[in-house]
Amino acid sequence: MTVRVPFLTKIRYFSVEGDRVAVRLTSHLENLRSARSNTRDICLSEADIAKIDHRAERIIGRRKGYVSASSLKREDRTSLTRVSTGVELNGPTTEDEADFLGAALHEEMPWLQPVTEKVWRDMRRHIQSGGVGVKFSPTLMVGPPGIGKSHFARRLGELSGTSSVVIDVSATTEGFGVVGSQRTWGNSTPGRPVQTILETGVGNPVVVIDEICKAGIVTSSGGVNTSVLHGLLGLLEPVSARNWDCPYHQTSFDMSHVNWILTANLKDRIPGALRSRMRIVSVPALTTNQLLQFCEREVRKRGLSDEIVEDILRLLCAYPEQHPMRNLRTVAKHLDDIEALCTTPILT
Image (tube, rainbow, N blue to C red; front, side):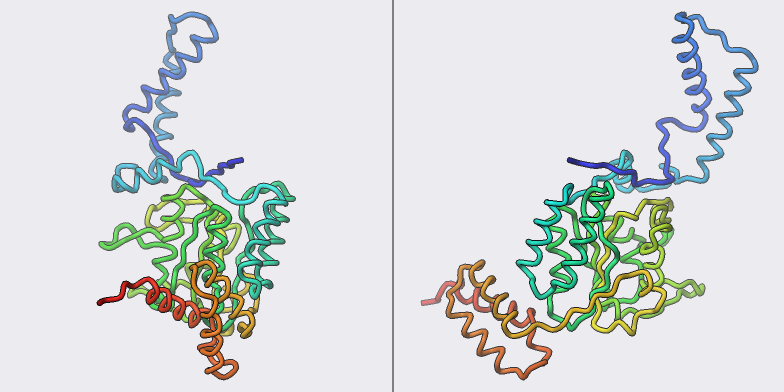
């Protein structure tokens, strides 16, 4: 079952210019009266014409408060037109489907059980209340690097049929990648969450903000706060997200169906105002057994020899307990190197 929900909350499109509004209203009134009287000979009074002119002026005046189609680039206008009838909500439609999704995530990443369980319970409650698709509370995953926090979010998007996007804010503290920038700027772009919805037509993507603890406070030359931390506040608040103003498109979108996962190594570096809008889940470092289980699944998936698991075990044992290199990234990197060697032709 496909469910569509409104996405544009303010924008309006008119197929004619302002000076044609009165003509269309006149034609509409004549058609209504013709249908009621079963005659095509309709004569409008001066009072009718005056009401039409007054209504046309009000409509044209209201248009100034919305985005004008002529002020958008052609590709932007096309993107907005595609979602003018709404966007889809993808994911489970029954409690059984939510159970299957939760079980699949747990089977692949059992060490992330604290997060999987909360997301699964949120999806079940959403469906029980009459909702459809993936929906869970904004979640902050706190834990050491290399435990699969970003991978979890991407797999959730893949398994549920929703789109997903990962935004790494460790390289820049500006919030333009999340909220977008003013269209009047020379290099302006929409935020990646909005861009993802416009490209896919799916209104409940999984958006990952990676390493949010490394984002700082940034202000423009005019004193405006442009940091990603500030930009996320309105998107994570349910009330403001339902009618969120996009600086690039200069109109409002319903972003309340977006699913947010933020990752951090340390939660203390995140402002309290942002932490209060999220559920915080701590994820411990992986044990050696959990790393080997991951390695075994990857070896089978890639069609490699089982002996490689023993090689990875010796590699992990070379690092002391709690060493930062004992993580999924290390295992995946060595598996990639081994797979590349196995598939590279030998020069003779």
